[in-house]
Image (spheres, helix red, strand yellow):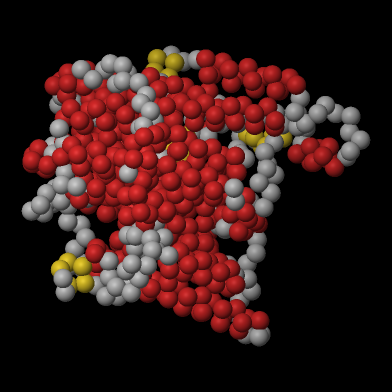
Length: 591
């Protein structure tokens, strides 16, 4: 969360760098007014509201099932935040001629886009349980793992590798603390894993000059009351301009809902199943609220529930996280933090979350699905490649970044799978899983669904619609007569229909008695059929699975109690466990 916010802020602040943008650079006063006076306080507002809600949700689930739940992490939509910065704010900035006016215009369009993204998430949330029934479990786990691999892994470690004296040590302390259980301390006291990474990074950062006193002095001047700003007027001021960016907004809205859904799956696999429809709708509401309080960044259930659960987090951490963000964002403290804690230190902590979601996916998937897992990583990797390329010091003559040249067809391919990356990952993973399981009818259905997304320009092309349906897009051309003519919008749709044709032929051949291997239909394909099946189960301090309805007995006895309507045992959630869970949650939140 902190890394995403600081990274997005760094990207915005780059527009005020005269060395890079010359006369069209945004003035420092305007940048500070919008970043620290509107965007960051808006993030703080939606963070505290969202974390408050999910803390309450976790307490409800803890009380209902009589065992401890870990609250769902809630924060910024990482791919969406960078997409809005580079694909909307930067694009409008350059199209409007830059300067303060261009930046403000881009900011308003991004607010409107964020509001629409929230609406899309809410609508899709209504169908959350249906999606769980029709999408293979791997199709929901792998795309979220791809974000962990690319944006929480490659992105974050690049900053650490760039400063090896600091970064190599902080990376290694992730493994020393969380995996080797090496903890700094004295006697029985031991520092938390994340805190010892931060301490090592801060000490080395200041010792090597990676942190500068001048930057901290400048940041200290920004520590003052900023507070929230009502920006609904800005959100709807230039709503008509949003039509040019629907190709970005629609995939992001779908991806935001998919991201939250995948995080719910990840939480379930870690042992905490949560209500799907409720969580997805609340996410969409949070994103809409963010746009009304100055934040162009959408909010979603965040990656990393397994990591928080493994670290011993319960429900209070979510509430504490929200209030810390509120205080830091409304009083400008984040500006000071930005100058004290360097990116080489923050990155490895976020990297640990990426490790956890990938481990969770690999532990769940059967070995035969590993090839689907690998190809499912590619879209987010391509998304990160183009994202980092846009920040490379390769400026063209007009001060813009040139990462769209068709000097090689491979770059066209990178851009194609970058568009709607999470959706592409979900679609291809689901299709390949059905191929690996020899479920030919299912593979054909996923190919047809992919074709529909391609027809309307939701995936593979920069803009939704049909304006360039039979001609190359601008990003596939390096000059007036120098375009790549083999990746037009209609071609992607036809390619998917061709795949569907292959699968249908194989399916009909099997029906006709062809000598083909039998389809695989095991438990891994039906893991989410009963979403709350294991809601009462938890691991005790010895690592044994225990049923909260019968913590001192066997699992078979617990099942017998459910089957026997005449049981005289206490109710499913005993009052003493309810009280204990509520008291524990309250104490943690207070702490």
